[in-house]
Length: 146
Length: 364
Ligand SMILES: Nc1nc2c(ncn2[C@@H]2O[C@H](COP(=O)(O)OP(=O)(O)O)[C@@H](O)[C@H]2O)c(=O)[nH]1
Ligand SMILES: [Mg+2]
Image (cartoon, rainbow over the protein chains, first blue to last red):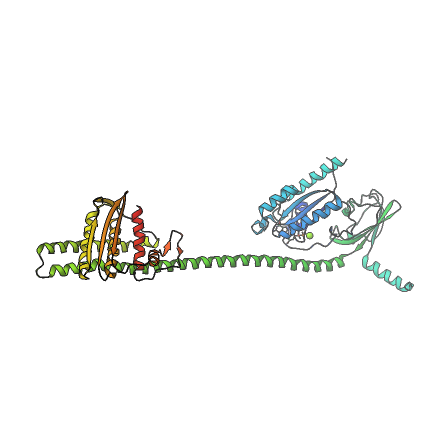
């Protein structure tokens, strides 16, 4: 089996669950406590950030503005890095009763973006599937590039 | 002008003590060549030359070792936060890690407060929106309740109107009973006339009984409908009855009373006998009441399957305009729309019902 190491960038508005999704994927754990992450920010263009192989966009289903933020980020990222591999996670699926994004909007997103997942870092729903899908996309891109 | 050497030296020592720099040199393949400084605090303890530094320091993955770069607040193993400086030097590359734990902690706590505030605001907005929805729901419910209340008031008003109307209808047959009873009691009345009086009294009483049934049946009126109860009955004898009931009342006022029944009028018809009786009694009752002289005439003709019963009189009549108003329904159709034009004329209320009934009977 070959090991492929890729740098993946997780982007999204604050408190949508980026840290939690990664934590769930890497250690299979979840914490309710919110501890804001301080670090390299992709939207600070001055930072010479190496082109990642892929992006995990994370939005929060209970906050529709976080989806708008993704649309923004996506166009910025596409401008800077070209058409990179990405998956879109609409997180906090366990709070579906509190979601304010309509199914029609999500369906439209799925159509135009592809690879849209309704995830929960809390229950782990679809986190693995989404990130595994990104790995597939990255490998596909690599093979096409080679 | 440069700072004095002593000050520069002081600041250098101060900075080195605070930043605790750990420095390592790597080749183009990220392999460790040499390292300097304390590495325990940043989780890079025990690294040996030759090791791929991307393992213990994953942030190096994909980073060009030929460009100068700096990264703030990188999280190292053991949750140490560093500011990293990548300094290329003739094919090799220095990486300097500076302790940023304190700076990170204070930045983190500031950012945390701001984020929590923003989250709170977002939640507040949501609550306000929900409140707004609830309020509009309340308003809706209130207008529904108002509607029901108005409906209840309307029904109650209808009932009062109905009762007023019915008491008016009771008067004619009652008057007829009294008249005929007086006639029968009078000395010198032939036994034949007494017999006739008793028959008329019986018929009036029967009609009153039917009216009582109608009153009991007033639920149908609430629904704004008059339900017809139809059966075969002898029309000619009904008309004769009417004549017998009205004639003495007309005579008492010095009015003439005539009945004309066209020979084409069938004996037996299929209709609502009680309603027809009601209509005729009221039309004729009013005709007698409001005619001061001359007479009242009851005519029945039959044409193309339609029975036309006419009550005419020589009274003041009703102007075309008033006829409109008299026959204007309080309400129309099942939609229950209230008409602004309500008839408040003395006999208007009564006539409305008869017109409605007359229409209903006639179209059957
Ligand atoms: N209910 C629920 N809460 C989540 C989920 N993912 C993250 N959170 C919570 O959302 C808050 C922010 O998560 P975090 O991962 O720190 O967001 P980040 O700022 O995008 O890294 C934390 O309180 C998490 O516990 C989820 O799937 N469901
Ligand atoms: Mg985070």
